[in-house]
Image (cartoon, rainbow, N blue to C red; front, side, top):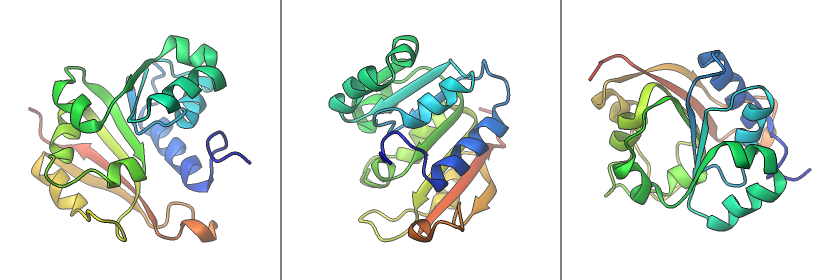
Length: 178
């Protein structure tokens, strides 16, 4: 299988969570660190079309246009770092999600969680490795400071997947209105 096309077990759990929390197919969803768009394409094929994908790699965004040409034409994509995109993003999304490494590699000198919460109307869903990388974060505390509560935690997201035992699925919901 191609890791950039197929959904691995943790990605399946992520997509189930996103679709359950945003059952209205007109919901606005953003994938932070979308790579070539496998998660976006999964949502697109299931009927969600108000999609935005952000990835640091312009090459990955270009590859998306080849792999998923119809979806790529209809959704919004941004090639740039979170540090470039988030502070200037005036859009708000019903749900913000991410799968992994790009999110984990953002240095703590950038207020990542604050900026993510600024663009999230209701939910933020993340599948990440909570430890073993250069910038560990206190996820629950950082989200709580922005008015979001941890409503679902699954460690690991897909227990049957031996190579994904280090991952966690965390779902945060806005409890404080701004």
